[in-house]
Image (cartoon, rainbow, N blue to C red):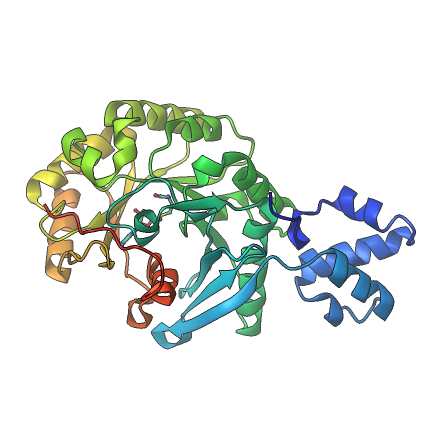
Length: 352
Ligand code: SAH
């Protein structure tokens, strides 16, 4: 188990650590960590000795390895090194109407989706609650420096949040309670880990759910998204239906459009048949080719045609723009890029 980092501490833990300090000092430290989200040395309302004590007892979880800025400053990506040397990434994206941070929930991923750079590299370990929360704190600080307020968090970085449910959910709770982001501005994204969807159905914070569908027939999904063999499409649909019925929230499906793989008219019809009864919204994004899966994303015209087709079939779809491709850093590529030439094996491409 990794050591407790700064944002793994609860308020009660902090009270115990600083039991010899006056109560208001504990409050000030808590505010420094959560309201300001800055380094202890910046908390000028606190005595220097206490700042040093906090910095020492509550080490930051994230040491920057690389930072890339692209899309005219609208996208910032960080590659972090964790205390045990594991590497994860975080992406901050400014849009006209919102600022979103995309956080990792695991170092690596065991889900083995062939088109995903993280899936190609395999699983290393779960992130702690503090390692997840600190990604949000760091992104919020950077956002504030750019004069923008961080408004949304999506769990679409490295890892499968529902394979690390408890720590992820605790992070959601802290982001909501301690950092003050509204539940409707938080989105958990799953490859389709059905037990996690069931748990979320009964959860007490109304966060959003996105399911990475990509293919809506079992034969092809078994190949593209291997967890489908464990939780096939009918089981997934049942869990999604129960979630929608219980929460009355809108479900989203993620669909990475892959040239010649899942972008035909038949694929659109299968998706429409699957999404319509669930009243799901579809997010389309052209695939970012990765070293282990050098297949192109669908062309812009192909993406538009697919979206139009869905519309004709009565399904709402939004086309998303890929971010950060110019810095070779989209969807797991930042870490992969830094390992290129190193020990990390690149699996042979899946050809279809
Ligand atoms: N494991 C979770 C969350 C992390 S992946 C999940 O599967 O939802 C976040 C999203 O990025 C998923 O929809 C995933 O399918 C998508 N994705 C992964 N690799 C991609 C790539 N190379 N191009 C486009 N989208 C990709």
